[in-house]
Amino acid sequence: MSLSAGSHGRQGLADLIAVARGDTPGDLLFTNARVVNTLTAEIEETDVVVFDGRIAGLGGGYRARDTVDLRGAYLLPAFINGHTHVESSHLWITEYARAIVPRGVVAVVTDLHEIANVAGLSGIRAVLRAAAALPLQLHLMAPSCVPATSLETAGANLGPDEIRQLLETEGATGLGDVMDFPGVIQAQPRVLDKLVMASDRPIDGHAPGVGGKALNAYLAAGPHSDHESTTLAEGREKLRRGMWLMIREGTTEKNLAELLPLVTDRTAGRCLFVTDDRSAADLASDGDVDAVVRKAIDLGLDPIRAVQLATLNPALRFGLRGVGAIAPGYRAHLIVCDDLRRPLARRVYFDGRPVAEEGEALFETSSAVDPSLLHTVNVGDLSVDSFALPALGSRYPVIAAIPGQILTGRRLEEVRVEGGRIVADTERDILKLAVVERHLGSGRIGVGLVSGFGLKRGALASSYAHDSHNIIVVGVDEGDMLAAVRRIATMQGGLVAVAGGEVLAELPLPVAGIMSTESAAVVSHRGALLNAAALSLGARIPEPFAVLSFLALPVIPSLRLTDMGLVDARKGQFVDLGSLGIEQ
Image 1 (tube, helix red, strand yellow):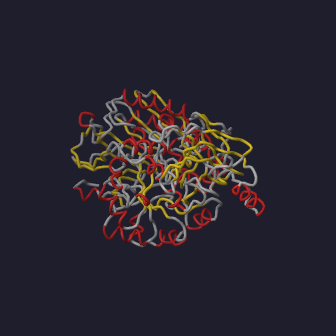
Image 2: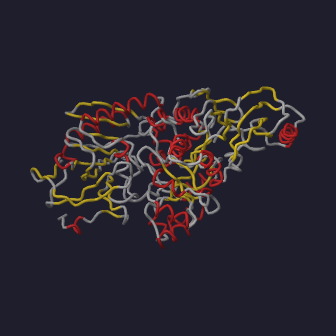
């Protein structure tokens, strides 16, 4: 969804051809450009003429109403993020655009399943309406797993009828994140119906750790791209079996250094860069997929190839016509930069119009939000006792958070017991974890244990918790956990750090409980205060709120917690405590 480029009628096409022939002047002429040709992987020193939002031609002898002498600067096709969840930035779509467009990112492939898990079709449509006037192309992948499983409570359910409606939406590209890989491999009808419906479209996979015959079965069903590879062996097998390899470098999931050796002369055409989830702080300080391009170059990848993986390759993977290259007939989505070894956008064009310069947006936006996306946090009656975990044995499963990954480990640990309840053991970094249902006001709560955060006191809580976005809270003290959840309910969504019953820092997220209408700079600043507060409580894990947000995601191995209980994500079922020798 975006501003449209040019007239598509016969006369408009004739006018474009006339400019391409050199018979009539164009709208804009770039002279003395070093064009990064992603189609042939070379640098061309030439001129580029633009008419009605499209590239008319390359070469000498063209005229135009306006001329920009690039004086040897590089002209690149604008970047495309091949897979991201815009909501993970905590920015409403208008502020998200203001954050990434000045970085040269003018197109994103996204399924919007975060907001869909809260507000369903109406949430997706509200984002698309707000994005329609922005210099940003949203290529919608219909979210296939809302909710991701039946092991959690979501705010909406998108079945085949809803998927069909989304696939018929203007700008819809394909089917997003097929996370229920056990359902696909077991050929469950509820999953197959959606796959059949999108069989003529790109289908995004989501199959962490899946290999062998299980991978064959998964691919046979239709998903042919994946951003969940974390090892060379996994990425290599998926490439060999026909998957497009999405190399992810987000805020918490950093796989670039591990997977980059897979990008060779033989495989590069099947690889692309994605961010998946990227915080407002990272967007403000480092950028979006443009930052992945720069890091890949720093790690030794050829600069032109790095650009290809964030322009032409995502365009080819998703069948995005007229973008990803600088060639006649292509949309004039362009970046001007001075150093190809460190491509930082000096100026950005969308359909031939300047939309950013020197890192500043040149377009206006509105902060208005559809009222239906406000007041979505509905927490039932809770007390300190709600966070109790009865001691039914001396040992209990512990989720092990892993810095830099969304995978978790699992351990069976001796636990500290007081008054018949399991309590936090800060000496051994075993903390209480809880997920509170917030869509129906049911008061349902799942309680478990987690290690890796290092807190010595207080609690951290968030209503941004993949994928159903119930409230997740980690803490030492059950009273602080309750205070944190109540503060989030009062804010109607957000992140908070609490100690001694007092709020130390907070970030309100009133839009569906997962986004703010503030700028990336404001959200980033509040996030920094939250991280500082977490550090003061003893946190030793980088980006603790980002890590916390994934601990309720029951489709990523190994151990997770939802509002319904402890989940073995590999088996796709609740943990049988009895099988672990724990009485129930």
